[in-house]
Image 1: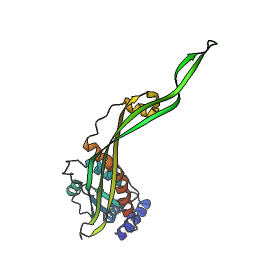
Image 2: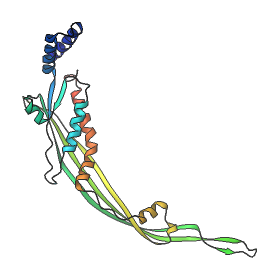
Image 3: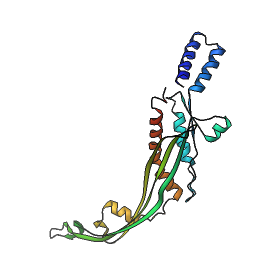
Length: 241
């Protein structure tokens, strides 16, 4: 492979002297084909327990890897592309989601007695005809409900030598996504509540997102981890330009 890479650059130099040379162009492409590390990125199995599609995550990873043109001698293929082009890959990358939960529900209720001092509760007319504010303490009993849905899991990434079946590298990454909704009620004087507490009491409880949405959200932090891991592996001296 290193000889093929050297040959590619030598034919590139030759084409600077004779850009029209069909022989040099042909040999350059032959050298490039032998120099490239060809990698098939296998599709991610459907998560059967939930029947979730992993195609969105897969497409993002594949596109990012193939759009990184810093390494001339590295090419990624979808399985169907490799079959159609009759390519025997050097490496095969597999990814799978495991050990995860989606939408684990946790409910919490907090009741708080509130009071606020020095609140204007009225006014009185003074002997001189002027009005004077009357201050007092206002109270309220606040109930805040919180529903939390936690989704988390692992993605396992493996790189295998296609010819020897040797495991070259493997790693697992964890992703977590927490969805939360707060709503509440109160009894008493609304002036004892803060603006944030009033907003919570004025809103309705909302329905949680669909499981597929929660699944996609917890995979988002896994995207960067997976891309960085694969990019770092292929930036090693043996695979880079």
